[in-house]
Length: 305
Image (cartoon, rainbow, N blue to C red; front, side, top):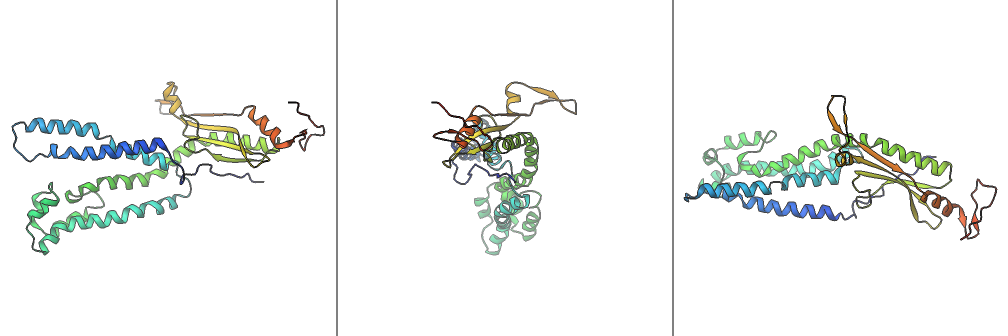
């Protein structure tokens, strides 16, 4: 009989506190980072202009980790990619791509539209202060040139779209990264199957195989796989776990090996084990108030408290 496998984590209802904290820090630093831009592009001719730009660059550099933080949050929430790759792309790419395409075209057409409306070219600099003299021509050919460049890079009129390029690229590569992670965790899954087969075939204890949620997984592990033994009252008892540790413990304890390219690499590790809790699962599954009577045992065992 094929074993029942389910994902014990409920991502929709799950509240991951540490990710919320990191998200708040990332949002706060993004706002602060953009507040430093006027220092870097100070239009005046103050005597201390060099000092103004220096401190703008220093503050900006300190706050730049906001973008990598958002990237890491995306990876933490989406890796490993579970399910079909095409479904992953269909669910996420259109949600980002179509608004990105529409707004990129509109931004690049803005100078030409101002020309059609007979507006002063100066209004372009009011909206896009970093735009060059080329856009002041209010020419359709210039706008068309920028639009044709969208698949390759953002224009000076849509410079704030750079993050969407990063996000789309991240979505495109996530299934590839996920495949590497899944391959590295196969041994951990293999041991989980060993536990499940032993519990069901030799102990006659029904179990549910699954993956622990973010808040329940082993500290430092990338994934924790578990068998949950089903008790007579319908409750589940964790009866065996297998952890995929990634390279976290290899880095923490400086465990390295020489790979096939003759270079040092931190060890990828797994950890698994069962304890006397499995014996408790056996007793709670097959016993009643009068003692333990497994279906495969001809002698009744009396439990003395």
